[in-house]
Image (cartoon, rainbow, N blue to C red; front, top):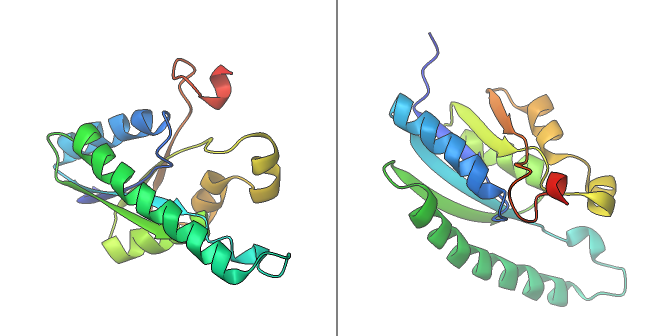
Length: 156
């Protein structure tokens, strides 16, 4: 029988992340597992050379990470009550970082939403969940957007 002691929860800190967190908490309580919530800030390094100075991009990403760290702290406190949980913010390519963070954490399961991006973002960046499912060597639970959540791509 599989043992799940550690769950990596990938969130984008949108309203939809609450639904993802609910599933993770349910699993963590049932399995007595620990949670690591992770938010991946985009690296934006691919835009260096497009008449945008590298220092401007680095400053912008730094500001995003700083803001996300505070949001993550609040999110973990509010959404992961009753389970051992912590949050982490890193920058990079989302799918690759989710896999890397799961390995570093020693996760037995990844929980993530299926639609963090819509429209042009999805065309440009693809589906992060799809990439994680295809490349992960551990199970991945994907959670569809809740049409009742404000700002949910399916509810627009």
